[in-house]
Amino acid sequence: MTAPFKAAAVQASPVFLDLDASVDKAIRLIEEAAAKGVKLIAFPETYLPGYPWYIWLDATAMYMPLVPRYVANSIQEGSEQDKRLAQAAKDNDMHVVMGLSWNVNGTLYMGQWHYGPDGEMISRRRKLKPTHVERTVFGEGDGSDMSVHDTNLGRVGALCCWEHIQPLNKYAMYSQNEQIHVAAWPSFS
Image (tube, rainbow, N blue to C red; front, side, top):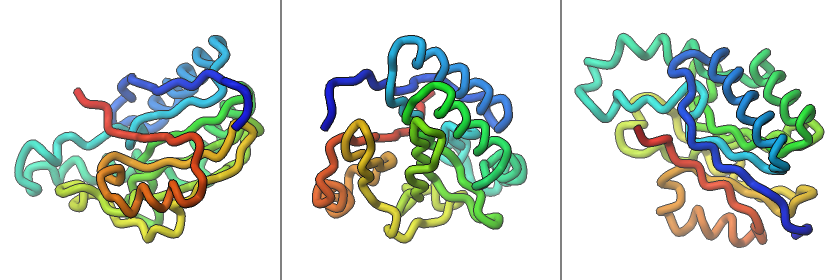
């Protein structure tokens, strides 16, 4: 691990179901953190476009009208929003680990994207097993991206929410000599 550095854990709401406005807000938070000397910033699980709390509140049929809007506001790899986040990481010389709903050909995954301080992608990972009713919205990852990555700050890894409850998930990270762990949980309202 390198010398001490500042890290930030974002505890702010996105602009729910508005991907562009949420990316704007995320960039403002990145810039604010950079002004305070932060070198790594971590966002909550599905910060983009917001955690779908409604799935826990009623029967599945009741929230189905929100599904198309949620899908339409879930980020895609290589999109303008992806490029803007990469540029924000570069402009602010910061590691950005973004929690998001990742749209891959119409299937949504709970993801964490790690942008390096040069704006290059360090990793894109999918939550291995969405928790309980999250499975009505999100697909399952396959574990191939549960990796720890060498960075200028140290060896960085990340998991989402209940992935931390599963011993083998944690062991996968420990066995790769993880030094810095980004633990993303949804922002509780």
